[in-house]
Amino acid sequence: MEGLVIILLSLCLAVGLVTLLMVFLLFARWKRSIRPDRLPESDSAAAHSILQAAVKPLSVIEKKYLALFLEGKSTEDISKAMRVEPSSVYTMKYRIKKKYPGDYQLPF
Image 1 (tube, rainbow, N blue to C red):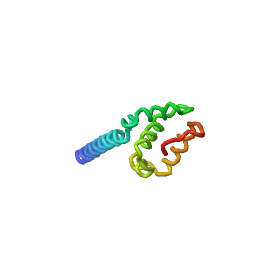
Image 2: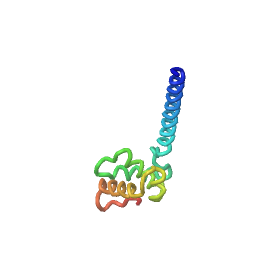
Image 3: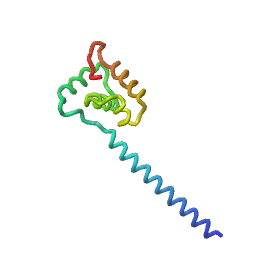
Image 4: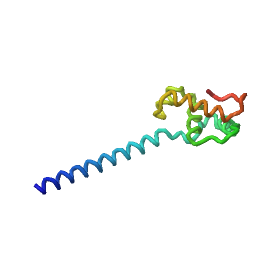
C-alpha cells in the first residue's frame, strides 16, 4: 500500500513539473510575440519625432502600443496582438494622448 502511495505522489509531482514547464514555455512565446520594441523602419524619422514630442516620458508599454499604431494596425488588431480587450486599447490611446500637447496630431 505504501508503494502505491509513493508511486501516485511521484506521478503527481511529474505531472505538476511538466505543467509548470509548459506554462513557462507558453509565457515565453507569448512575451516574444508582443514585443514590437523597434519602431517601423519605413517611418523611423517620423516615429522618432513623435516620441520626442511627448511632454511627459512614455512608458515601455505605451511605446509598444504607439509602435503598433504607427504600423497602421486597427484597435481590434492591437487588442488581439496584445491579448487585451479593445476597451484597454482605447484607454491606452487616451493615456498616450494625455502625454502630448493638446494640438499635436497623433497617428490614431
